[in-house]
Each structure stands twice: as structure tokens, then as C-alpha cells.
Image 1: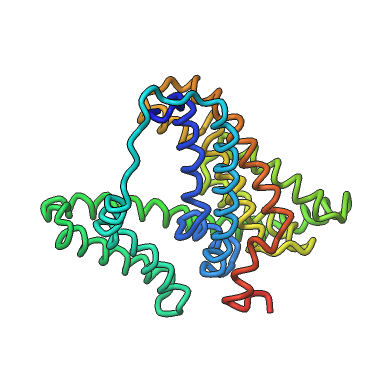
Image 2 (image 1 turned 90 degrees about the horizontal axis):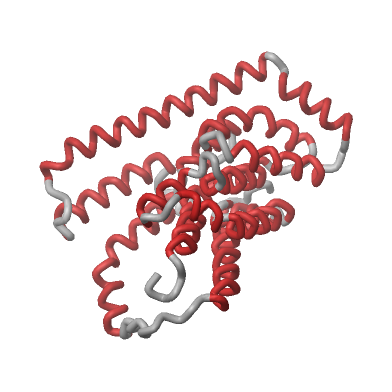
Length: 305
């Protein structure tokens, strides 16, 4: 806002960028998909890096183009000096290292994704309590209770996904759906486009984890029958559902941004449309260039060889 952007536009920008959280590892959504689809969590984590960067670059390009119509502030904002920048980075170095600890441990084969999360918790606890000293010990019991409730909810969803997958497999729903779709078309492009449209619609009113639990056992067999890699389809599915974070009526990110930014929801909902279009363009690029998703797993994990 201080740089000349209006408040509703600024909130829409932050809400859109917030969807990157589930696209770039580590991501709970990726873990739920990996369990539902029976694919490697490590491969999925690695596959999400480049598509996440593609989404980010698309949002950056749109913002640069949009910047041309922004009024310059009456008083130029002071820029941080190199000394101030380096000082801030030095103070934040231990916090910035944590993603490297998590992903580095996974990709190096030192720990599993589950073990890496425990390492990250211990690392964050030590840094917060003994280095930064911003976390009082008296707050730990309440934090652990809240974390336990959150984790248990995720585990219930994962358990339900496994049960749901087995039920529809016993009922041969994926097989019948595959035969129906293949009887209509043999083009993976047409089917993938149809799946993307379905996911974009579902994402507007259904929570992401629930959508993955329900749709993965149904859609994945059809896509694999047409030769679409399950890891690649997982990334497409996650990105498509993440766009639902900023599309009404669900639009969880919109509600949060409107509340934090003190902007009426109607205003931010009107300003989000160009951001959604930009993200859909990036989604189509990711969907139809599988190398963006599968390049890193193939290089570092010999995935698919």
C-alpha cells in the first residue's frame, strides 16, 4: 500500500501467493495425495519444486505488468541499505536454514519425510527456546495439544482416503469409469483438460484434502490408463485445487486476506479474477509440459527408469 498499490489489490496478491504453500514442499497435501495414490512422497516433493516456481514467476510477471498503472507514492519510500539487508539476513539465518534441513535430509536419504518433520520440530524448538528466546516454556503444553489435534485430524483424513480407495476398488468404479472415458476418446490431452476443469470447479466449494481423498481413486486410474504419470498428475491435481483457495465461495485465502487486510470481501473477490487467470495459465503450462514436474525426480531419484 505504501508503494502505491490499493489495499484490495494488495490483499488479492497475497491471497494468490498463499496458494504456493501446498505446491512447494514440504506439503501435507502432497503427503495425502501420495498415500491416496500410492506414490513416493520424496518424488512428489521434488516434483513440486519447478511447478511452484512456474506459478510464482507467473504471478510476478502479472504484477510487473499491472505495476504500470499504479500511482507512485507522494513520498518515495526509503530503501534498505546493503548493511541493513545483510544484518537482517544474519539475524534470520537459523530460521532460513530449517527448510534446507527438512528437504536436504530427505533428498540425501538421511531421513524419511516423516522423520524429517520430527527433526524440523526439534530444530525449531531448540532455536525458538534457546537461541531467539521468543518461545516461553510455559506455552509448550498448549502448543503440543493444538498440534496433536491438528495431526490427528490429518491422520483421520488419510485413514479415510485409504478406506475410500479400497471401497471404490471393490466396487470397480475406477475400471468402469476408465472404460467409459476410453470409449469416448483416446486422447490424454482431452481427458486431462476435462479433469482440470472438474478440479477447478470442485476446488471452489470443497476443501482440498477432502477433494484429494474423494477424487484421486476415481481419476488416477483413468489418467494412468492413458499414460499420464501419477506423480505428474498429482502435481496438476494439487495446483488445480490450490487455485480453489482464492475462488469464491470457499476461497479460504480470500477470507483470511480480507480479515487481515481489513478489506470488504466483495472488494477482494472482484480483484482476484486476473490472478486466477494467471494461475490457470501457469497450470496449463505445467499440465502439458510433464518435464517440469518429472525433471528433478528423474535426475536425482532415477524416477521412471
